[in-house]
Image 1 (tube, rainbow, N blue to C red):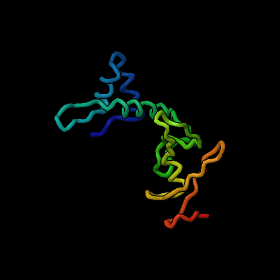
Image 2 (cartoon, rainbow, N blue to C red):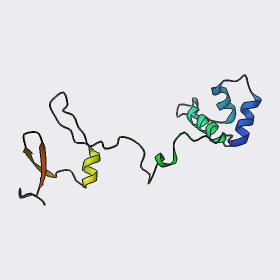
Image 3 (cartoon, rainbow, N blue to C red):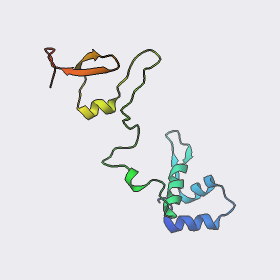
Length: 127
């Protein structure tokens, strides 16, 4: 038997006004049994079901998952020098450029800038 959802879930909640959220989740079937035999209440699934039953969406449509990619950090195109003096360029940038491990760069230091120039295996710049 699956968990109660939709109008049935809202009706269950209204019929049990003195119950805690955990008790309501258990009554609605939002539980699972762990490998060790303990019963756990799936509160997040229960809360999401209550929101969905009330037709409430917390995320705007344009921010929802697209193409299987979840949220996470977004490229800001800014970095800071770390405590140890290193500059770390994140994976978002290397992925965007299609770089693979072992790609080599020449570092060119200007008065107020650092320029990375991708070089070929023989050391010549790639245009």
